[in-house]
Length: 486
Image (cartoon, rainbow, N blue to C red; front, side, top):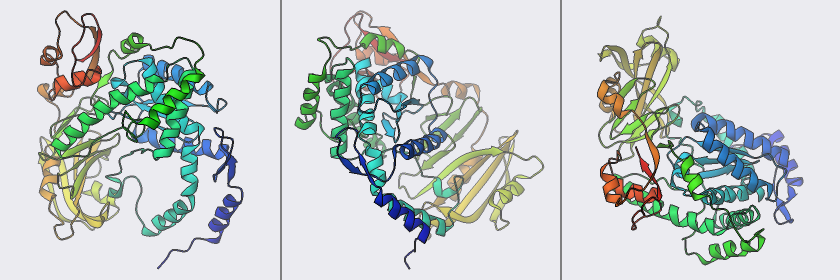
């Protein structure tokens, strides 16, 4: 039976349709959009609040100053200079950047690690500013607004719970690109903003070359590990680095150059990267193989061998190679007046638990049981386990996709919970994050020799080459500024 939209919502939608044309600030022509600039900014504020919950900012005043300065310079030379732009470095290993409506622009520390000059940083930020000035997110939002309203009504009718429901276990925040034409338009605008701001638009080609290599390496490693690759959405995913149309828009932007010289800022940029976290951060926890270590919270646990671990801000999620199940761990404040069993009953607001039993692990008290609840696969049997430690309780919840094998991963879920323990001295070292170290290349140094002394455990030489834009061939020159990992 089809859902029926309330009359008030339909009237509101029709009202938007009547007033749904606005002047595109880039082209000057009319676009079909369903929101004003004020609504666009409000929507960006809302989305940015949600993103900050799952993707916290990376605390580095030196890099923050650089990103703000470069971003604001580009914005001043854009088609929407009066908009208030917000630039944020996200504490994420992903090589990514994205823009929200209303001028909210994000770049990950993973992206910063692979760039090699201020001009390349400007190229990435300019591309994202192009998405904002051309109102790509608004235009995309407008065409799907009525569908979104219907989706909200249908979601409300299902009774699916909120953020702490198992429904959201696999909900990684992934901001995808827009589409070939919008991405190419963002390339064109970004190149123009670079030229007007004193950078050579050729920096966009450099970024494409650098990150194409990183993408190829990531895809190869992900295939070997049986997982999905984490690749950047826009500047190079929509076209190869030798794409004629892309080169045309970059070359066309050179007419906007303000003088004969262009700022590159290679050495000054690289020096600012000194001490940048590389890989997992101590603040969020470190994944090594099937083990998870958290230095600040002083604990370690082990997931089943071969499972892919996805470390998010508010939870850790692991999935088997078959992708037919999952388990997550979250935290909550404990109520010492409640037993672990009572805590679980209170959390689930239900006494309908079965196959329950108390357990003790590494001197800590816990409880495990099964209940029915909402999952990414629909209503399923969920295996829960809780472990008390001090003022915190660690909650494990997992399920299987198939209803015919509802308890397929029960033993794995319980084993994961029972592996929870305080860090020992050896594990404390494993929980320490890696950092970029900016050095002058020693005489006779090769990437092979530098890799031998690197703490990178897998593909050390390849990763050092990628970081320094010398992949797959090339060797460092004596006294050249390099990024290594310590």
